[in-house]
Amino acid sequence: MVSRTARRKEGPIARLLFMPLLLVMLQRTVTLHWGDPLIGEKSPLRLFMLKRYAWIEVRFLRVLYWVLNLRDRYPVFGKPLARKLSYLLAGKFVGERMVAGQVMTLEEMLAFIDDLPEDSRVAVGPCRCRLATHACDHPMETDIVIMTGTQIWLDLFPGDYRVISREEAKEKVRECYELALVPMLDRHMYYRGSANYFVICNCCGCSCLPINGYIYYKGTGFKFIPSVYRSVVDVGKCEGCGKCVEVCAFEERRLRDGHAQVLDCQGCGQCVRVCPNQANSMVKR
Image (tube, rainbow, N blue to C red):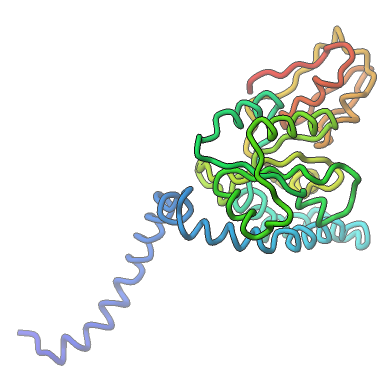
């Protein structure tokens, strides 16, 4: 029979031996199921994190813009090793998990707005990237918060955001698209296909931190949530005018041998809008 003293001595040792097993079980549970209890659409923890993000968003984006432009002042930050390190330390999580974007065509975004839940309110306010960078003169009121984002941004910034109808939101997206802005749907704490939609952005290559981050880090592995469509060129119709190259915010077009060439298309469809010869079309990936 084991004495009480022996059991007391065995207790701490047994707990120490059990701890690694507990950690493995916890890791597997988090990996397999954390989308629901921790970062699901209605998760209190995720909503808390989204509110904290909203509160610091403009300041946070200002810091990111400064970091991305360090290479202009200190060329060493543009070197492959420095780029890789900064991507692994921050860029990968921030751009692919914390706030993950998916580029859409105009038609896709309009359909998405139509399909929002009936009880979901929509509000519009100033673009957070343009507030942070002051890098362009594109319209400011282009930030369309939706679903779990709407009430949070209305509560924190009542003077900046106003509730609008879905038709007004669609008209805003159309107006921005005509100005060559890119429709982008953002998700918060994106993991294994989680929805968590909170904002529709209308992005430009001048101020948009996700697009600037993509251009800076794409050689390192950064990617958006894959778009549904990509552009193709009919070389028989293309006259090499270069309009599609100019309008591509992602710098994924070039002229080669007198014709437009598509690189890694992100799927916004702006090239289709500006082509005078209907040489561009969008096809499913």
